[in-house]
Image (cartoon, helix red, strand yellow):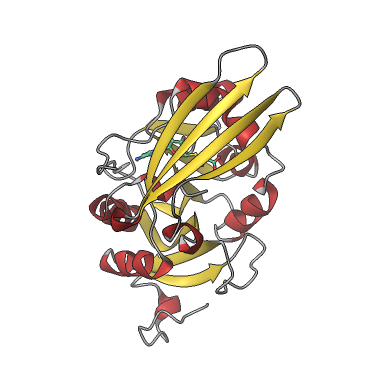
Length: 263
Ligand SMILES: C[S@@+](CC[C@H](N)C(=O)[O-])C[C@H]1O[C@@H](n2cnc3c(N)ncnc32)[C@H](O)[C@@H]1O
């Protein structure tokens, strides 16, 4: 596997099935509750990789001002369809490069979307942009999988998921450990149509690397949980929800600099 240079923004095929891949009952309710808890009422939220608005739309309905950045015109078109009144402001852009020119009380990036930045340099650039767009007292929330179970994967991992009674998705995963790259292939078999295959390459990172990149960007970890209901993150956790503050945030005043703060 060579280092990819193209963006992982979703094409029309994937945009068309996205809401069936991640149905609303997934874990959207608890996610929206936690994001709301971290944001002052009516506050400004930037979601990186907003997609079809699974999270952004319920937040806008609760009165937050939500700007959703996405590199995929097809996903933004789905968002527009779901939100013709434009309660969420959809903006075309790449979160590793785009500065919106505004400040936010919360910046969020959900379900592994951060790993779509496929080099360490791109991940660092994304975090520096987050820091620049974070208002004083603001929070950055990142939800990603823990790479432990994939890092030693030999060969291919295959799984199926039923999307609805008439269709299913076949997923395969391979890993290039030396580059921390994971190649995922999704094939959707839907009714009588020909199967449709899309591929993504992501660069996974362990929590320790994420925290160091964040620190280099002027951000500090303040919480790490294994899910949206704030269960403690442990050696058995398969993913994490991590919250960072600006390194000038008053909450860090008592932090000895070892990242142990959980305020
Ligand atoms: C897994 S979906 C997440 C969508 C939404 N956040 C959710 O939770 O349902 C990832 C989204 O990130 C977008 N994306 C991928 N790389 C991106 C980049 N570098 N900049 C902006 N958006 C990107 C894709 O187009 C896609 O819409």
